[in-house]
Length: 443
Image (cartoon, rainbow, N blue to C red; front, top):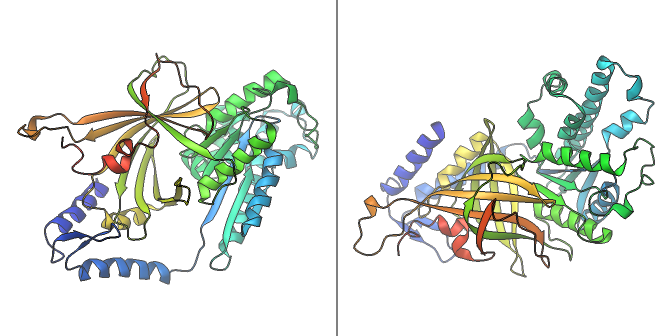
């Protein structure tokens, strides 16, 4: 309610002439007031106050997860090499379970309390390593780019706990489930070789000797692990549809997409499809539902700026998204999680020519792909000349999206689950940016 009130207050100021002039659009695309001294002063003051704060660089944190024998070790090495060659400082948080279990822990000889202490110890090690590397990065000099790559994330530990044990660990570590989930800018799930590359599944890469799973057990663990991360807003699933070197390149490309770095030759592409219906109830898929609000901001740097307010299971995550276009015409999103206060401050710079976009996003995994069914709500009705717009019903648009390799045609869910009409990848009229324009409903 407070956010809606703040949004309404800002909009009223901008449209009532409180800034002493009318709106005009610059050649750069920025929208300003004809007498913009007051407005510009507010922006400069906000930026100045931000600069006066102690310098704390953005620390990107990415978790690599997945089933056994999925390629995490090779991917970690390639990520480190690639980003260091691009001038980044890269820190790798080693897998905490390996540290703990290689020290002599035998679960078959643990009672229930000992099992709890082992799992809590794994979580404690994860938190300590991640926080330590983050603190090192936050002490970096201005201009340094820092990346922390985690060999598994906190939610991985929940796979090996029942619900009471996991809740006890969260309580004892002063964590909440949504905090454990959202502490990473991105999560990359590598599918085990036991699912799609069975001939390559082996235990030889398990140097510490703590992996003993059969192929079937590995597939089950892979599914459970993916399930605990499916609510994450930036989950990437890397399957075995390519050979292993290209699988590793796809992992590096996914990390590049998260942090806004120019990727290597292997590119991932978001494919979009216009749908006539979603029938996820009864599909048997593990569906995660979130509600998102998108607010577009005035921009003068040739980048698209928008805010996202994401609500899932009662928790709220605020994100500032900057979209740019590279020399080859590919879009690149850099997502930076922000505080609620920063979110309210940035609402001051909402583009008055664009509407708030509200959608319901339902995500699920199918054929080792992470799909999102987006129901875009409250779009302006299409009104022909002479028709009464006040009686027309708002539009709803259904868009299915999935990440895939540029040269690959992804397998879509069954038509009984998602009835796709046509592919609309790259068609601007189906983008949220276009749909947010206030005149879009005019025929």
